[in-house]
Length: 316
Ligand code: ACO
Image (cartoon, rainbow, N blue to C red; front, side, top):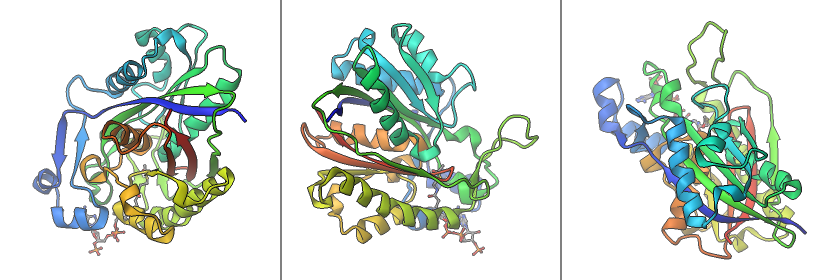
């Protein structure tokens, strides 16, 4: 069996923090409403020179340094996102130049919304099997503050900016991710208009429908990954679920009868960072010693598309 291990992580959050109390000053909302409905207390927004590319570079450099990997060793670079600085070039191509990857490195961006990072993990696992070099840099990064309608209080209080990076190593005797993925085409529940639609590129979301979708797919996806890996959920050391809403997470934890101590999140401080949420959380788990060498973390995302994805990742 061949597969990948997680070698190192990095993350970057913009310096500017927006608390719920800051939002109270500019719209009809309250800290109490946001906390009880979502679990969110604050989020980070890019300001000034900070942008999608700068967050990616910051997170990627940390991961490369911590993993002791020279950029010349990278064979695959993927960025999961829906808010890149330009439609083209892909952020992954900009990273190739800025970080000094070889020109035959496979570089592209991937949009599977909030499931994007887990989709990218599996894509990297497949590509690395045939790649010349056995290391991949996979990022999830978003600047959702650029696609928020500040007059829509039911969406704009939820989202934040950030980037997370992971260095993956492929090995013939490494474990498979046992990835599970799916999509259910739907333009009504969650949509951001693209170029030439005549509409501003703001997030349109039917929160209640997303909630219903999430509580259906997240527990099922986690169960399917564990079944594919031939282990019970009790044997999983950590869970890194997409940080969309604490109530969705609490529902999944209860339904799957998980130990809450294995499910620590960061939504209170970062809000929902879409594709960046799982890798930012992974970095925080590794940096704080909550995920240690040899341990297994079950990652799962769900969101726009509608999409879902889960995978079991082992720390090298
Ligand atoms: N502050 C105060 N009141 C508000 C706010 C706000 N920010 N937003 C909405 N309200 C009001 C509404 O106007 C409504 O008032 P009314 O009863 O007088 O009409 C009331 O609060 C209830 O609104 P609902 O929309 O019914 O609130 P709900 O309990 O459904 O919570 C929420 C909304 C938080 C968006 C919830 O539906 C949710 O979390 N859905 C999932 C969203 C999600 O997970 N998205 C992430 C996936 S997508 C992605 O990551 C890109």
